[in-house]
Image (cartoon, rainbow, N blue to C red; front, side):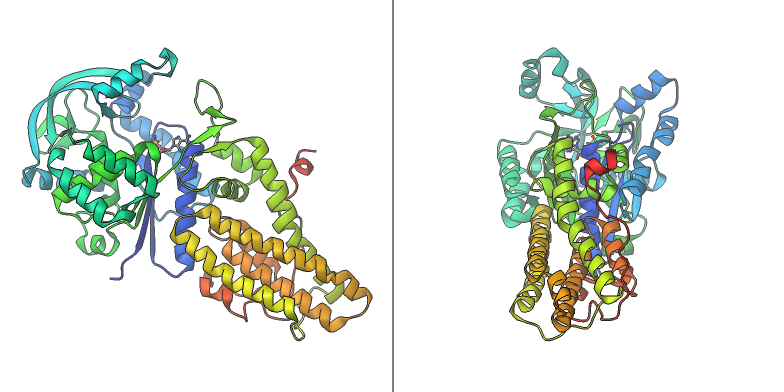
Length: 514
Ligand code: MSP
């Protein structure tokens, strides 16, 4: 079985209301998955929901329902996001599924068998929102925050199973040294290394004071710590332990995308669990930054939570996707504001790509009866446009290999600007007036072909617009059968294709609100 390209998002707390943070990771993972498919890879793309733990048990209790009833009722909020944002996940895992329970029990047993689990007592602090044990130093830092900014912290003292994380300090450090690409961007790797060098304490991996979780094998008074349970989702969905052949074909994951706040769980705890269970480690954990909203931290109490459903409704999924991936380098923090998205719509999309497509198709209708003409002999600028298109394909590939979406989009938009300048300089309207027919054919063909290249390259980011442009260019080949090298194929756009101008692809924002 050939190895699949495996990309994941975190699994989201099922009772969260989806916000820009969830949408961001999911959209980024989708761009990677689509790009890889375009390259011809066999992709497996996973997302899902994290459904166990104290917080969910308490919320359900407060609602007078069972935790599973709560989860079943609200999981759709995440599942529907895929349709609305045009996400192509191949699986959606819920940690309450039986396949997942089998997987968690199996990895727990393997770790126990390796001598890395022991029973003791945990006494310390617990952050309920983040389902995380916190150190005394972290506790002191939290207590310095103003009261309204403090997360809910509780004192815990109970019998607990521990995982011998301390045993893995050296092996983890060696792994980071040997595979510096394991944590990306590089500045995040330094943070992780510093944390591990500071010393690792054994980790509590079970709780006894609530019930909503997977029972510890052999001692059902304990439920398995929700992060141990949640992280395991990545191997469950790949077929562990039920389908070893499938698992071997999918695992290890090529990339786990996570927010920077949950990097430690993915880059320290998770690899240590896997080492102990003798399962290969994922190749990369990529941590992205956080969005603030109009300069403020996003929070329910401030009422500034960005709702992805509303964004998709107001701007369209493609515009929202484009904005998130273009606005900031993937990895860094960014600020979301309505002004910023409107300026992207009106600038890059309406004036840039939208204008190029609409004026080209308009001229083809006006001067060539709606058909792409066969080109005459190329002059200097046609050759340089062609060369720029070929080099663009390489630049996008390089950027996508680095998970640098903004660089890929930046390069595509530079090319769009180049082609828009070419149109202005060649002034096809003047060529038409002066009846320079052969030259007009060459220019119109060159622009059409350039738009063809763009339509393929934007697909990972703006899938609907990409396919729409492809269709409007009159291409008869279905988009789904295209592969990346086709973008560089001189036969990409064939003379004689019948184009359709259609309505504006990206209306200026003011026009929509009038
Ligand atoms: N259930 C855990 C993940 C388990 S994975 C084995 C969890 N869930 S979550 O619902 O809280 O999802 C959080 C994800 O959203 C994280 O990747 C986090 O970084 C991201 N974001 C939450 N708020 C965010 C912003 N304001 N900006 C960007 N991403 C942020 O954690």
